[in-house]
Image 1 (cartoon, one colour):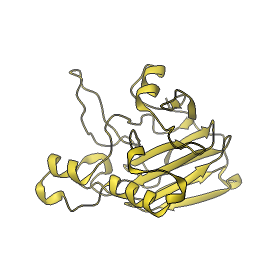
Image 2: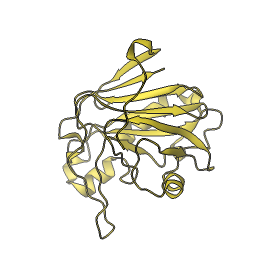
Image 3: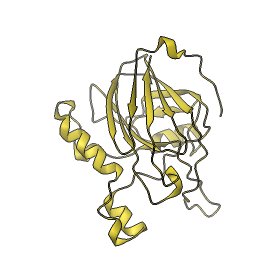
Length: 211
C-alpha cells in the first residue's frame, strides 16, 4: 500500500548514509520513527530487528505473516517478534512491497545459486557478523541472526508456491518508514549482492533517518 509520510526532513534528529556493502547497527527508542530511503533505486536493505532490552526477542517473519494474513510487507504492517509482540509498525511506504521470505545472501548461497567462484564475494551475512563482532556489548550473537526483511526487494511468490528474484520495483528516493513500539536495535546490511537483479547488479547507498 502506497502511503506518503507526514514527517519533515527539516525536523529529523539525525540521518546516516550507509554505503553499498556496509552495515548500520542503530538503537531506536520506543515512539521514534525511522525511515530507510533507497537513494538511487533498486537497492535491497537486508534488516534485522531486536528488542533492545532482551535480544532473545527479535523479528519473526512467521508471526508477522500469520497475524496480517499477507506475505508482503507495506504500510499498515505490524512487525511482530518471536514472542508475538509488536516491534515496529510500517507507517509510510512509497515503494509498496517488501520481502521477508527470500532471506539474506551468504557466501554459501552465492556458491550454490551462482558459481563456485562467487564464494569469495561479500554477502549480507558477512556484514551482520562484522557488526555483532564489533559491537559485542549489544548482546547479539551468531545464533540470534534469523529472520530478516529485505526492504525494497521484489520476491514474488509463484502460483506453485515458489519464490523468484525479480527486477526491483523501487526507484530513486523511495522510502519506507516505521514507528517503534518498543526500544529496538535495527541491524541493516546494505546488500552487496551483484549476482541477481535485486540490486540491478549495481549496489548503491541507502539513507537512515530518525525522528
